[in-house]
Length: 473
Image (cartoon, rainbow, N blue to C red; front, side):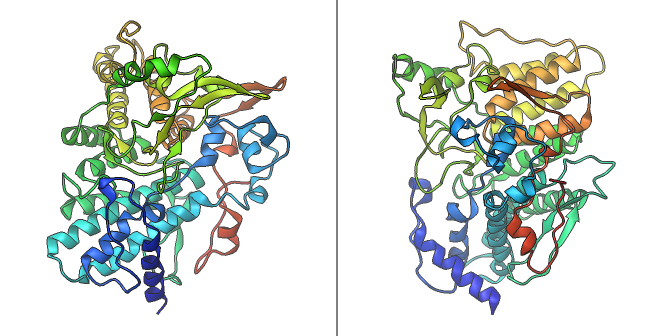
């Protein structure tokens, strides 16, 4: 009965569906129990339920998202992360930031419901049912990736089998029992889900861009294996993804088109987002910090963060512009529209490939890795500035690749997950440092702040299971 009740609640959510563009045009079925494959498949199109997962506090910790001075005068979860306050008890403070947790599990629950009921859905062939189940498995795995790399320690092979990760829930039943599994178990589960999706016939051309296609599955496996330091498998799947789609967006042309409006003094134009549903780099579109139900504005970034972009970066010029408002100076986001902040793109896969190639080098010939990196840069760096990058050591290669990747994937989970991965590896660990109001702040690679605490509501009301915090405060 409770499972049926959940299904009714899910269908009621259709009433709130809005069409962002031609990709998303569907007609709500009304208030009924879903029975046909079309009924169930429509749940995948409710982006607010299944395709919207913010990772806000990871952006604050990296200082990727600007926070004004008025929001830093008291100790809150935001200020604790933004100012790297290691004395603050974030477990106590985390009684409101529940979006990452509950939206991830909302998506997972919808996927679980589909995987339980689609096998007997009517008005469909077996191959059509398998296709919808394959979509659900990839989306479920991607949701667990965000949870595992937000609320638990990063993957390290020596400890992954003993350290706890997040609750693994595979049933849509409200009272289904669950277990907080180890990091190794959650990674094994993600890989299994995606490989099963591929075997089930995940299509090369998905129904819409908000349905993950075969290239998305390969790209996600490349991301997961990179996080596990399995560079051979990461490279294999990166190549397979690029065989599906290897397009790169021409940011130089975008900048040239809007240059007059961008460079006009005291002007902060509202430019069309290039990274929306029709972005040529998309394997799979999933909203991150924005809201999928209506167009949103690009996030602002701190001045210090802007300094890390490469000289002549047309993508940077096209998206942010320096501004001072009252006591705050920051780079204001110029774009408005839809942003692929939690999906998968070709640019990420190129940069995964570049890192894997660099790690394969036994001597000092990093040309193959740099060729891949430079292919990306050539579509970003203004031609009068562009020069191909070279590296003679692995450290140089990693630093150059990481700079581009951090900037390309800003506002996504990837820079945060990468930083944790590099910190755990040790060789390429970085301490972050800044000065605010005359005081120097430092975030060390070993800081407990790199793990976000579960929200209070989840720990106090864990359902039919238990949840243990993975961080001390």
